[in-house]
Length: 299
Image 1 (cartoon, rainbow, N blue to C red):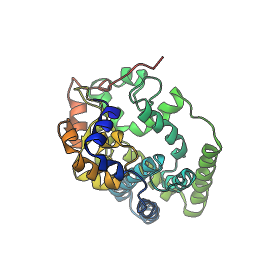
Image 2 (cartoon, helix red, strand yellow; image 1 turned 60 degrees about the horizontal axis):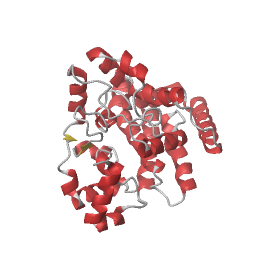
Image 3 (cartoon, helix red, strand yellow; image 1 turned 30 degrees about the vertical axis):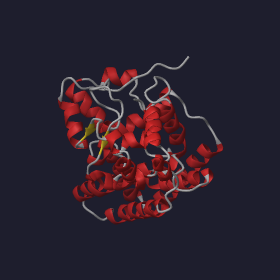
Image 4 (cartoon, rainbow, N blue to C red; image 1 turned 90 degrees about the horizontal axis):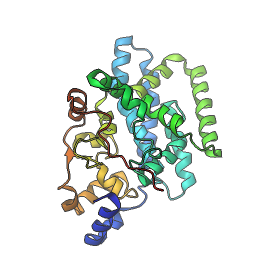
């Protein structure tokens, strides 16, 4: 059963599930607090010796950066405000501590990921042919995991360039202006902290485990959920089958959706640990970047 089929089946069996869809008003306050916390942390960390600086960027900075990534994910589904323009504008603010202007381009790529999940040449969440050939073996898979953020940043640009729009131009202009102003006013160390946190957040970090666990699995199910405690730090992104079934249900109601229709979700394979799945991915000789359901383009 694919996501559309299961969505129809859930709504037929549980019509109340449709009421869970819509905007979550509290999200904007959570995201604003995350932005403030990350910026404050970057300024306070600049006085630390470098071992503590690096440790803080991994433990706290990367956790906050990952939460900011996933706030932008919620905004890509227009789940903060009813106005699409308001969601886009707020995404520019949330993007600031991540240093790289990606929030608007991500909307386009992520829509294709949902509409054409696993379709070669359209869903740029799929590892490219070059990645699948280059990162083989335990060492190759470990390096790929450590540098996932680089793959996610470069792969879309190299395989399917984003459409240039006034919003993408504004995203770039606002981000570069903010980066330049921060560098001039705050100096290099707060920027270094933010950059290191962003890199760690997309690599070998417990919260980054969702990137791998969402769609990698040896059994061909295609999408997998995780119901563990790290959901509390990551906008419930672990409820990933539920999210693909109902992309208009915000993070705060995904667990309610699961409980409402649990007979549809409890029977599916799920990951018990994001970190455990990453370790298995690296160490199991039978695993690799081909552990994704791939579909041909529609003619």
